[in-house]
Length: 196
Image (cartoon, rainbow, N blue to C red; front, side, top):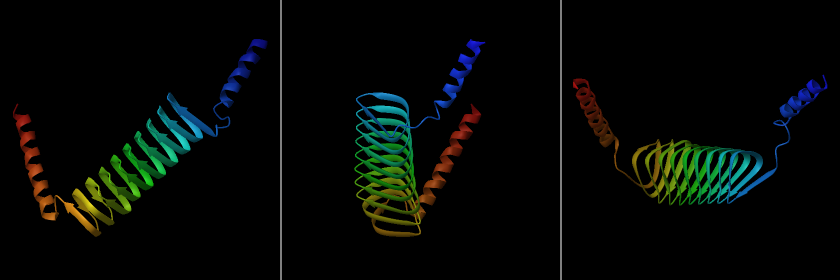
C-alpha cells in the first residue's frame, strides 16, 4: 500500500507541474529549444520550435511558430507568427497574422493584419482590414480599403482609396485578361491530362 500512495503522489505532482508558474524571462543564446512558454522570450543566434509568450524578441535566430502579444524580429526569421503588434527589421516571416505590422528592410510571404506599414521591404501577399502603407517596397498583391504607396510596385492592387505613386502591373482590364488567359491555359492542361 505505501507504494500506491507514493505512485499517486508522483502522478498528482506531475499533474500540477504543467500548471506551475510560468517563468518570467527565457533567454536562448547560441542554442536551441523545442517548445518555450514564458512571459518574455529572447532568442539570440539560436532557435526554437514553438514559442508562446507575451513578448518575443528574435535577434539573428529563428522560430518555427510564435504566438505572442509583441513580436520583434531583427535579422531573423519565423515561419508562422500570430501577434497583436509585430515589428520586423531585416528579417523574414512566412505567415504573419497581427493587428499592427511594421516591416523595415525585410519581407514576408503573407501578411494578414488590420494595419500594415512596409518600408524598403515587401510581402508576396498583403491583406489589411484598415490600411496598407508601403514606401519603396513591393508585393504580388495588396488588398485593403485604403492603400498609400511611395515608389512601390505591385502586380495586383485592390483598394477603395489609393494614394501616392504605385506602379501596378495589372489594372482592372489587365487583371481580367490575365484571369481569362489563366483559365484557358488551366482548361487546356486539364483536358490534355484527361486524354492521356
